[in-house]
Image 1 (cartoon, helix red, strand yellow):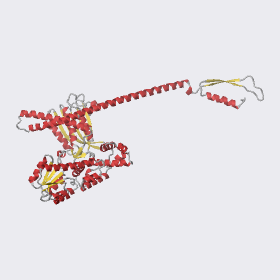
Image 2: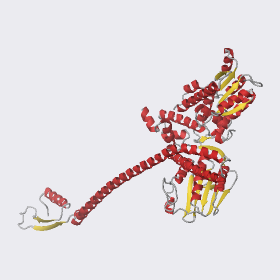
Image 3: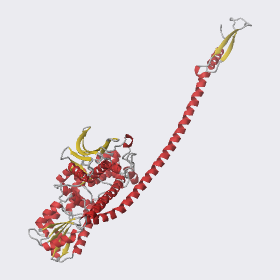
Length: 606
């Protein structure tokens, strides 16, 4: 058989192919045929063709499509609604937390204001009470009442101080001030105090020190407050049994720790409450009937964090509690304020706000007169002649020197010259006392480096005024240098003498050469400067008003600013280059110094 045309063949096949993508279709194909050169036949053949759709166009496939689309749409709408609800809930929770925080801040601010007001009358109460306790004319029965009042006043004063310290830690105004010493002595001292105060015969108090010498860097005040609070709680919540204060060295994950443990056999803490006991104002159900503010353990946690330590708690109701404070043994706290223990001035005096005045005078009456007139305002050291005055000045590093000119062994001019030419004491103001009032004599004294002259005879008020002015001037210079964001050399050179300028330049160079060292060794700096650790600390403190650690940090941040301005490094690279490997701590220090974050600082300059 043969179709009449090729086009007919193509059209039929094309139509059939197109129908493959339609729904179910039935066709009848009528076919006629003939032999060549013959007529068409009248009858024709019929071919029935039935085309079924592909499976993806079948009715059940379309049903699946509809159900799937409906399901997806349903879940999208449901997810969107859930997200809106979560967003709304989060916003409400955030607003609630913010209001709670504001309420807590307002409450704490209220407590702080009250405590400030209470501290003055409490101090005024304690003074007369202590005088009455020393009065032998008071009868025994009255003395007991006075002792009870005194004890209660001390406790109230401690609570007031605790609230103030808590406020400092909450606002991050509390600064770590460390010394290198034997912490075992401090723990024993605190333990002995509580041992003497323990009047409960049903409680035994033990002090266990693994070794008599554990030398680490630590803040005496912070450690005292931590241990005092924990021991106070132990005695408060233990009615019968044993309380233990222990100090030991432990190693965890190859890191050495100094651990302080306070354990008791008191009422204990439930497991649900352990996770919340360090929250402000939180009190467990067991302890609610016992008086307290709920800030003691929160203060402890803040102080432990300030000291870069950790605190661990193990407790079981009606069995007892154990609080363990761990400090890294080899932590030197490079960014904290360091107190030098080599100074001959006691620690209590070192914390005093009084300046140290050295009086060098060979006539005893005049020396005693000057010392007595200044003693109520300053800590006074005395020397009989210039030679002894130099020794005391180099040993104690006073804040100001008052010296007579005419003295045996070594006169005042030589004393002044030696003080001003020594790198450890060149910053100390010197007042010369003289009966000579000629221009030549004054010129000689000023050439030796004297800061002021007082002519004999003189009044005590004039001398006190001159001392106060010189010390205030020195404080202003230190404040000017410390407040200068960039430590400008021009400010330093105009404010200081040649030796002090050279000292600042040398120590700056040493520190800048070791900036990438996260823990710059301060004793090594002192050795390179041929100074003792104590002389270095007092020298920097006198010149800049900053501790050695603060001065190092300022230089780190000055270098960081230079690297930021260069635009060649990112913030993490800059933090590493200046020895502050923690980026978050670097941002915090930078913001404290410049009042804005590094990124904000760059944006402002652009």
